[in-house]
Image 1 (spheres, rainbow, N blue to C red):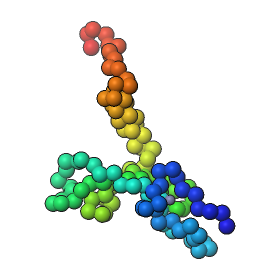
Image 2: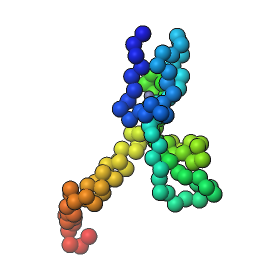
Image 3: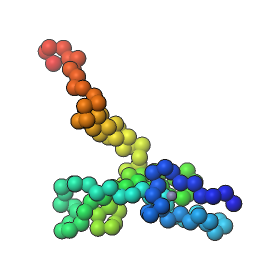
Image 4: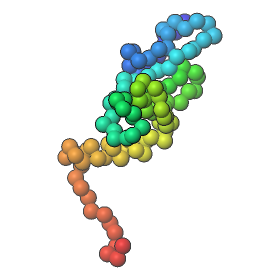
Length: 112
Ligand SMILES: [Zn+2]
């Protein structure tokens, strides 16, 4: 039996896919470490911190999801492909903040 392979983002502390699954069974999910979000929202309840992390079921062809977790419970998820445009915006904003990218002028006509 071949060893279980994990995506680079999978954290062994959170992944619960067994190394040697029973025949016919591939339960569990790959999971990343949880990133605390400094998110202002009433949805987080009285004391709950909001976390975000990635997960992917062990099922073949399963997609990767970005999940939000409050008080230990997933409260929302987004297919990672749908999160990509936001990830690129954040990457651009961080590059600008670090000084790796410089602000640019918009090429708009004067009457716009
Ligand atoms: Zn894993």
